[in-house]
Length: 234
Figure 1 (tube, rainbow, N blue to C red):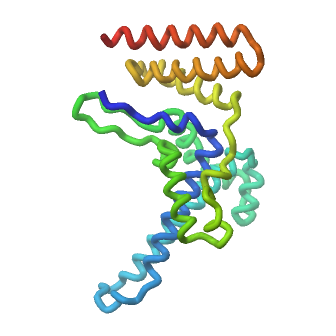
Figure 2: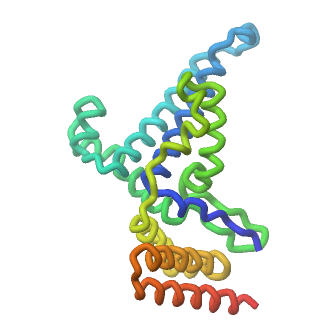
Figure 3: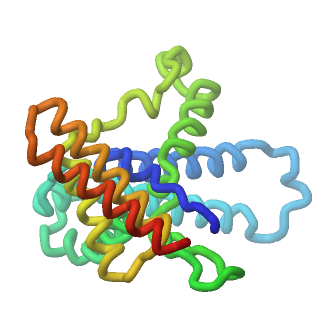
C-alpha cells in the first residue's frame, strides 16, 4: 500500500500558510526573471509579452491571496485586512477572500484525498507547500541562498529556520482535527494508525514534561488503538 506523507502535522497552520506564501512568491519571482532576457524576442508571436505580463498578474493575485490567508492565521481582523488592501471595507475584504479561507481551513486538515482504487490517483486539497512543508522549505532555502539578498545567502536556513513554531497544544488541536476528519470520512488502515501513533507521541511528551498520569494513560490508549487498526489489516 502506498504511504502518504503526514509531514504537515509537524508544522503549525501559521507556518504552513507562510510556506504557501513563500512558495507562491518564489514562483512569481522565477517567472518574472524569465521575462527579463531579450535573447528570444525575435521569435515571439504577436501579443506574447502581454500574455506573459498577464500571467505575472495572475500569479501576483495568488501571492496576494496567500498573504491574506497567512495574515488571517496570524489573527489579523478583516477590518485590518481591508485597510491593508487599500482601504476597502471589512465586508468587501471578507467577501473577496472568505471562500479561499474556508477552503484553506478544510484543506489543511486533510491536504490530500487518497485514491479509492489501486490504480486511482490522489488529489491535493491544499497547496503542495502545505502538504510537503519540509521538502518545500528545503527547496526554498536553497533558492534563497543562491538568489536572495546577502543576509539570506549567508543564512543556512533562510526559510525553514524562521518559521512560526508548533506548540504542543497546537499540535494536539491539529491532530484531533485530523483524527475527527479521518473518522468522519471512514479512513482506515495505516493512515489512521499513524494518526494514533502521533497522538501517543504527543501524550508521552505531555506526560514527561508535565508529569501528568492521565496523559500517560491516553498515550497507552492511542497505541492500543493503532495496534488494533493494524491488526484489522492482516
